[in-house]
Length: 178
Ligand SMILES: CC(C)(COP(=O)(O)OP(=O)(O)OC[C@H]1O[C@@H](n2cnc3c(N)ncnc32)[C@H](O)[C@@H]1OP(=O)(O)O)[C@@H](O)C(=O)NCCC(=O)NCCS
Image (cartoon, rainbow, N blue to C red; front, side):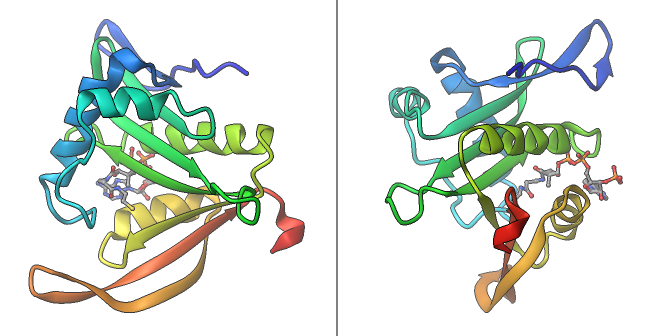
């Protein structure tokens, strides 16, 4: 499977979607933290791994981390964490962050499509994610790719003083199971 594709042309550099390597750890943390600093997209406001911890995480063959690289910059990161038990190994949870200034150029969709391809090739049958009901751009991006809403947990979060629902979305790699 080739993980190298190009999509967005930026001056003299091109976007590459590839599997993360341990040497990417610092830039992955910076990308994740910069999106967490916006405080409206993720529950956690701090990326919990140190650089060494992140390098260890990247060595776990059960999980996939993809990066969107433009030259030596990493403006996009996707993580896919497979269920760790026999009962849920056919599922994976997806998380994604594209840095402000790089959004709405196809980077997120490219990352997700690559993750869905990997899931298919690795025996995963359904890919799950959770998204705040206020994150309409992300919900629309997921729908366009083929995610459907499987459920919602009402008023699960409080963001800037407002109650926000937790929207549970799924992409069926194997639609027969849906
Ligand atoms: C959600 C996110 C991953 C989408 O990635 P992206 O690279 O911005 O999305 P794409 O360029 O592939 O666009 C896909 C669709 O998303 C929607 N979208 C993304 N950014 C948008 C924006 N700024 N305004 C309006 N729609 C937007 C559009 O429907 C778009 O489809 P279109 O190009 O046909 O209009 C990215 O915006 C992001 O990381 N946002 C902040 C963090 C976040 O929300 N993470 C997910 C938490 S669950």
